[in-house]
Image (cartoon, rainbow, N blue to C red; front, side):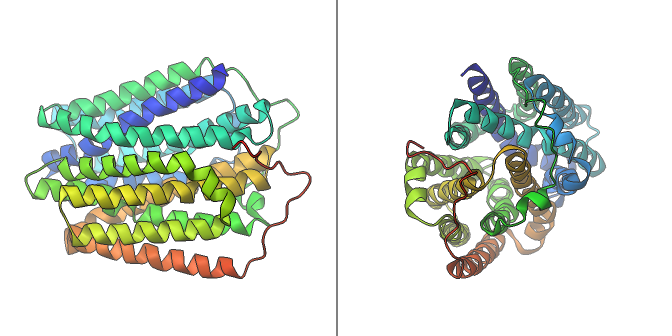
Length: 400
């Protein structure tokens, strides 16, 4: 119980700090460099190590199998996070430095995110059959809470003139969550030393692959929501307001969606549910591009929040019911790679795209792309037989 609580709390406070920085970072970059294209540079650069992690991190991700080892990675990430506010304070922040900090942070992200998730899933396995999904659902729910309360707090801080302080806060909180993780001592058994590749673990799991395609597309177009709304607010003389409205609405919808997520997943075939969910998200992005007002943005974001939660729960259900042990850890790492790499790829391209065609056109185009891919995945899923259940594979209990 203690290990699960420590992992959940540590992840939740780090997520909250990330929401602070999500509002503050583009504003600091705009202020220091005057370049819209540079606003997504750090996040985009962070995706490169994550994208390449299936090759360089195959053994390393299996090494992060205890709290102390997770703490080591977190300490390194905290140091990297301090680079941007320190450089901004000294007046030496440049696009090259943003790219460098992003690259270094990407190495930590490639290990810490899947490491924490895998540790949490392993803890759930010790509780009993199907409990891994329960803990992963709690983890995702706490992330949504951070989405609700983080942006408004950050907007107030920005209005008070402490924008750079939010970046320092993120570095401090990540360090604190790492120190907290030292309390997690449980490690994998000595016989559990396999390190399968993500590709090998994905073999024969077509549902997981389709789920990653549609979720990855949603992550690529995510920049239109976060970066786009941040730039829109700055351009309209309301820095942080649009993003705070959107993220808060998204968080409220996500929290509400989490309450019934597992009930919905048990009644709808997972891949089809994921496809429908991200199609709805795409329509919401387009809606934000057509009606750009803080209130309407919050409404569209709330609907998107509900849909995303259901889509993520569907994919997590597919992973946990079709895998266990090292294969499950590899798939959870693979999912983290997909999410982080695609999100970073979107950020890397997002700044220049917004600079060329504008925020509203970017939101509409991103939404239509998401709908197209989701519809294609849904069509492919229709021809798939319902997956069988092997006796060797754990199935989530009815209490999930």
